[in-house]
Amino acid sequence: MTDKMLPIQDDAAAPDVLQQRMAERMAQLQEQGLLRQRTVYRAPVNFAANDYLALASSPALADAAMQALQRGVGCGSGASALVSGYQSEHLALEQALCQHTGHEAALLFCSGFSANQALLKTLFQPGDTVLSDKLIHASVIDGAKDAGVTLRRFLHNDADSATRLAAKHRPLALITESVFSMDGDCAPLMALRQIADQQGAWLIVDDAHGFGTPVTFPDIGSQPCDARYADIQLITFGKAMGCQGAALLGSQALIDFMVANCRHYIYSTALSPLAAATALAALTLMQDHRLCQQLAENITYFRQRCAHVGIALTASVTAIQPVIIGDSHRTLAIAQQLRGAGFAVGAIRPPTVPRGSARLRITLNAGHSQAQIDAFITALQQALAAHR
Ligand SMILES: Cc1ncc(COP(=O)(O)O)c(C=O)c1O
Image 1 (cartoon, rainbow, N blue to C red):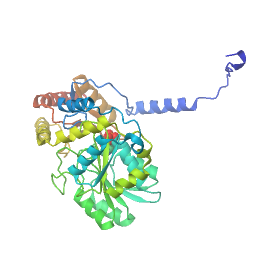
Image 2: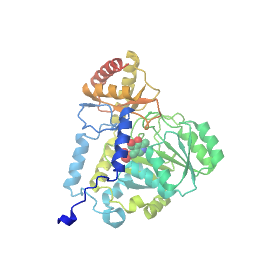
Image 3: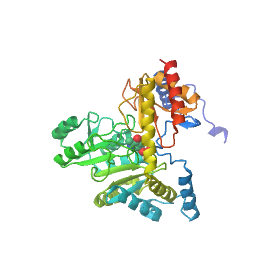
Image 4: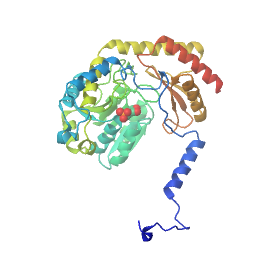
């Protein structure tokens, strides 16, 4: 660099607007107890994950992945699906998912977030109206924004509210989660199906937290969500299947349309064949109903023990068992004390949940032993008492 090229020291340099903006925002989040930070996960007992069937680090799934690698399945797909990334592992997984759910066709994505966003952005046009539950996942909200859709939200799990809004706004689709990620309660699927039918609208169900787990819907009971109820069903492989990736399931016409028009699918490297092969193995392992049964028993045991020692739970009967704390700082402090005692739980704060409803998001899985649940409940009691 010559003298001439040296940067000029300008005493009156313009302020770094982005730096300042970031610092202000971070200070604000810190003050409100809403700062999100990562910690390397080390707690020996996990009551925070969505690995409901304890498959993520199961020897059986690791073995299946190893076998796939040994028979030459690639770690990476190498290209987008429409170039050369779509391989026999993807096809096999799509077919198995269709067989399992009754849908005609499936399309794989690298995550549930991108699948939801891609679906809304591709299927809808500016000016369309879509109805969703008030507590619908961020990926649906972002997808609706990207599509320029008017998203009207009915009261949480309230079929009457959905009926009123549907009659008023004539939506093209209704969207709900099957099991709500932060509350663990289940949607009135049959009622929403009927409302959609009356309006000639589609019912889209984000089944991220329902697929593979014991569910009890208020109006269809303990049947799994599938093609009978959902015109389009989203499944993520990162929850009960213990893997990574996601699938949209629906009619052949829908999937053909997505393949031809979906920018997330066309311009992105396809899911790795190894991930597809592993997810297929997870789907096979899931067919062993003992896992689901074990999870159901753990949920019941947890709820009974909490009732016995006076820990207030919500009405959720799924693997997601929130303990509502209210205050964000307190929620964090309790979660930190639990972590110190060797237990991971989610400390969920606004804007993920409504203001004033910060909570511990406790999740049960099929691998928890009763001794672990007992020890966790003791630690939870102590942490709640220490941070009243
Ligand atoms: C309801 C719901 N939908 C979609 C997603 C996104 O799925 P993924 O984790 O595969 O991106 C999540 C993840 O948290 C979720 O809770």
